[in-house]
Length: 446
Image (cartoon, rainbow, N blue to C red; front, side, top):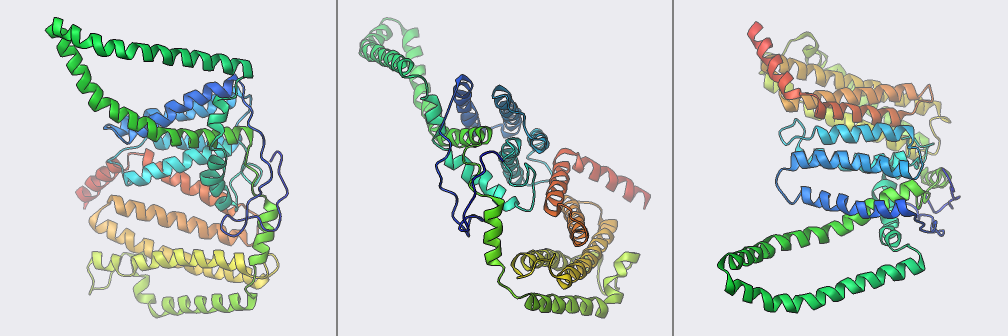
């Protein structure tokens, strides 16, 4: 990362450290910056207009295309080539925006939230401002904090500075022109105030026109003015994010060294305590599996206990097993983050990572088998598809976690990209049509 400042030990994670408050780069601007500064007004107004008017679907699609083209054009005009992963995220943004549907398989607010997060993250990626060589990594929380909070808000006033950054003499000329225009308006208003009623009295058609214009001004202009006011902070946020990423201004508030030092301070839990906890957890899972072997694995063979219906059997323990899987992922993350010895220094920690991951994968596979048995009886629905995809992603994460104990793979990056691709496919592909067709064919053959 360019101009990477060395951060003290008090810097690192957003909630645990203090950012680097060294003097940021000065705000510089050329004609390209000023032109794109004015164009950002259109982006900000368009974003507000989408959610304050009808027809969100097609408007959001147009906005998405405009946003992606705006970002690429700004990078191109500044003669800066976006980082490779930036292209990936811009493609994701385009796919999510163009596939947005209020009748989609994903709840619309979640679609919009995912689109907004991806759009912001894509800009940071394109600028090569991620902590790990411009790539998503284990520092995803810090990169996300930079994306949503640090870069846009630390550069919040850049929009005003860029638009007012013309030369001194040129700025004075523009100010004189603006004052002259305002003087002309001041002269015109009292004249129109007197002339318009007189013209309306002379002609009924003109009077009707003035009345209709007055009603339109009263109803529509107020809404327009509110939208403009709401768009001002959105414009400043968007420009701060994009300008800061392109110029790498306030993108180096955190460094890997500072974060590692902070995390080193947080490694306070004795590994013996962690090993004890993980061993007990593993014994509980083994006992659970052992006591219910005949019941818990029956779904693998398409069987169900006679005392349960398909729905009762699938639901009994299904969501609990999913929650246990998420809980285990959290436990392993904390164990590897706060133990005094890292997994590279503790062989037993690596062993327990593998054991807990393998047992969790077995529980996930059991839950999936029960869901498959449920689907075979009642067919596919949106919730069942979403649940299966989520469990597939969890299986991948725990598989990667086991591989991570023996090879230096980018666990977080692969998991993040895989999850993003799966989510995007759920939005892009005609899942609802496929479900209906599969259900029709399946039940016709039964």
